[in-house]
Image (cartoon, rainbow, N blue to C red; front, side, top):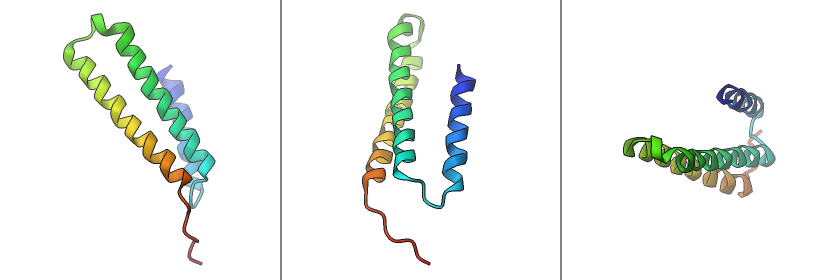
Length: 87
């Protein structure tokens, strides 16, 4: 499953890299994908907390919160007005 997630992420990055300024819809799609990552991370903790060490739980939780912060910043940036591109 992880390989398919990486493939989808790579395709999104290729599309974003080809655009001078990524469109708001693409940025929001990436932010939604990041929210999915956060939800999956906490689902892993909920499902496997008994088999994980305290450090493992902390690492997964901290990376999920970091991704959540990126998702929030991406969503806010997608909604912000853009300056006119210099010609």
